[in-house]
Structure formats: C-alpha cells, structure tokens
Image 1 (tube, rainbow, N blue to C red):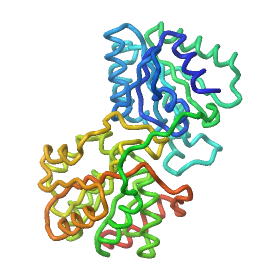
Image 2: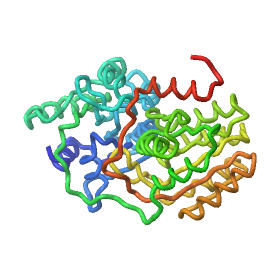
Image 3: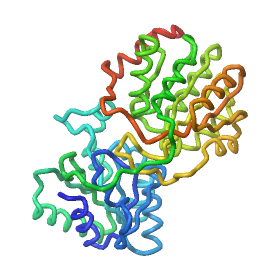
Length: 378
C-alpha cells in the first residue's frame, strides 16, 4: 500500500497528529508524514518512544482527539511505562493508535538485536492489553478497513490499538531524501578516531551504521575489532556502557562513539556522566542531524549544539568540529589531557552502499572483547 493511502485512512478515523521515532520498516510512511505541504495533520519526532506517548497523552487531554504514535518494535520498551502507568484504561484511559514496525519478525532474516524482540512483540502487546492487528503485503484494502473499524472502536472506548507492520506492507516511496550541509564524511572521521587511539584503549560504539563503520575500519586499520564493543542494539545506552567500563578500568582510556539521535534518546546520561566525571572517558557525538540508520528522517532537534549541552551538564572539556583538520587537532589535545571530554563532530548524511555488517554473533564479539582486554574472566 502507498503510505499516503494508509495515512489518509488513519486521518479518516479522526486522527490529525502523528508522533514518533523513525523505523526503517516504516520508511515510506515516515517519509510521507515528514514531507512538506501536509495540511490535514501535524507531525512531531520527539527524542524517544516514551516521550512520544507522553506527547500523545497531552494532545488528547487538550483536544479530546487520539493521536497516532509510531515506532520500531524495539521502542516498545521505552513506551511501556507511560502506556501502563498513564494511558491504560485502568488509569487515565487515554486512547491512542500505535503503528509499530516489526523488526525481527519470526522466520524473516534481520539483524541480531531484533531477533528476541521480534519474537515477543505480539506477546508484549497482549500483556499490555493493547488490541492489535498485523498488516503486510498480503493485507487487502477490505481487511485493512475492517481493522481500522476495530481501531476506531477501541479508541472510542478510551483504549489503545496497534498496527504491527511487516516490512512488505508499504510500497517504496518517491519522496526526496533528507540531507544536511556538513561536508565531513562520518566513516572518514571514524577512521581517524580509530587510527589515533592506542592498543590499550577501549572503543564503545552506538547502534546502527556507526558500529558497522567501526567494525570495518578497525579490521582495515588494525586487523581486528576485539578492541571495540559494538552496541548493536539498545539505542541511547552506549554512553552509560562506556561509563561503566571507565569506572572499572581507570588505567585505560574509553572512547564512546555516539550518534546525535542516540544522545537525544537518553540525554539525561550526559548529566550523570558529568557528575561521575571519569577522567579517562572521551565522549564523541557524530552529529548528522538525522536518524540515518533507520531511514534518514531528520531528528526533531536539528540545529542543536550538543557540545554546549554537554558543557552545561558539566563536562570539563567540550569541542565542536566540522572538518578533518579540526578533528585531528582536538584528538591530539584530548590525548594530552587526563579529563572527561565531549567532542561533537558534524558529519554529512552519507554512507557506503556496500557497508558491511559484523560477521560474528553479538555473543562472540562480547567474548573477544573481554578476552582482549584481559581484565575479567568469562
């Protein structure tokens, strides 16, 4: 189905607001609602799925109209608290339509971080008491209309209803791709960072294309990637993983390669890291102002200066660079000091079409990482 047709059916049951975090399985849908010129609805991209639910609750309280909240199924975890403690019919009874991209669908090939959540997506919705329907490429328009009738009835009863969307449901869209004005290529920046760190240092990378590029560049430059912990799931948690390592390995320098979307998702971590103030941690935010790994939609906070936010939170050293020479100079400065540092690197929306993926399982990468650093037994 074309995304515009699906959106038209949703607005047809009275929904005029779309709030969510992008997902590659929903890319045509996300691109459509993010396109300009829409006057029948409003669209917002908050920092995480729980925040999207909160905003939808506020919108309903102000207007009496249910909103549509969209997300990848991994985002259900972020949404559970406000759904159960606020929106549920046993509490405030806030109606809400959810559109959930089904990553890791059983029987379908997908990335390892999606496998378990893919298996438990429908059971979680059952536990949450959210009536739901699965839609895919074989769903007829008549079936969808019937499901929309069920959704409308649930909303009228102050309940939630979810569409679990298979990857083949939407036809590919033809909308223009989002870009930014930055010139520095992210993979080149990652190559420079990896080449600058010592053999005893630790590198923690966030989920998505950043970890894929770290994997390939580490192998190319050093012949191994056991030095790196690839946080291939758990968006927004790489910095706290890095903090946990920094506190237990004070003799090693820990580099965290984050993305701007990941930093936004759990920005409170910046304040906590600054308070802990590990002098052996270097926090690097590769900022392309987009959720590139899940389709390329811009974040809801384009233009934000992340280094200034880190400075306000209490990071003693903060830097912003947008070119290779600036990056090289800041890396030299950081290596000459023993202080917590935050580096914002403004990068382009660009990645190789032949960018590979880790060949080992997540568990194998974990074991190699722990063996390489030799500070613990597994």
